[in-house]
Length: 421
Image (cartoon, rainbow, N blue to C red; front, top):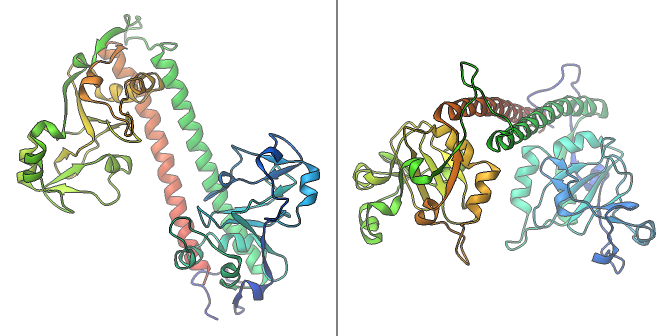
């Protein structure tokens, strides 16, 4: 059996190679018989946690929403109850989420639902090693090939039993898993730091935009009262894609493609930071769309669909840019700070006002006319700048931690690729 690329130097024995079933790994289905809990069997707090789909995620167990069954109901169910060091895999709907029932889990009695299985290993494989294997690219690739069903993806016990796994001695398994678990702990700490910073920012936004907290001028004096301003007094330009012509002329003169002179900026590009497949237009299309060409710092407002009201700010790009459909371009005038306006429009206060003007029966939408009807109480430009700088500094800290998380995840992915064969 081939050895992994990365290995602790004190180990040199050959790896074992077998299918799950041959390695004494049990795949245990839940009890789906007549005693399976119905809606009136569940409690907010009782003897046994009965897992729901939201409890088993890509990052392990999450217990934001829980349901329980009593001791009597638990006793009626024949199988599907977790033991310490069991793993849970989701097998229906969202397939392949993994959670590990270790000492950190705050429940003693847990049962799986009908869309999950238990993976139990006691003889040949250490559970913590198996947990890391199930997080590896090897298992991900296996899932891609074996999950079936288009309407509702699923995975069977028979298929899971057929998985092949290579593994060293238990001593080496423990060392590998402990090392990788330490990396997981670092990622978890960074994730918690990211969440705390995000919560801190949200709390400060509420206090700043409700004027519970006020900055002072550089000379120590108090800033004046906030002034009610309509959007026409905040933005020097409120426009969109269709401002450049009729639907027919747009179809005839605008040619989006996978490469070109200028970015054709869509909501999806703004949401993913221009990291995935982007669209472009040629120079002729860009010139035709001159009324809605974009510049760094422009604010873009999603005006249709499930994300209606979502606000973005255009980052610096390596090419010119123009706006695609379903976005409204908002260009801040010289009397306001664009970073402040961006932060303000993302605040709970502004979003509540925005959602009140959402129209449309089937597809939620906001027209430019509806948007222009809004007005907000805003501070002076000097106070806006102080608030914007303060919130932007928090954003920078959040982004640094987000990058640290991504780097740690990529490092872990590389380790998994090199430590498993």
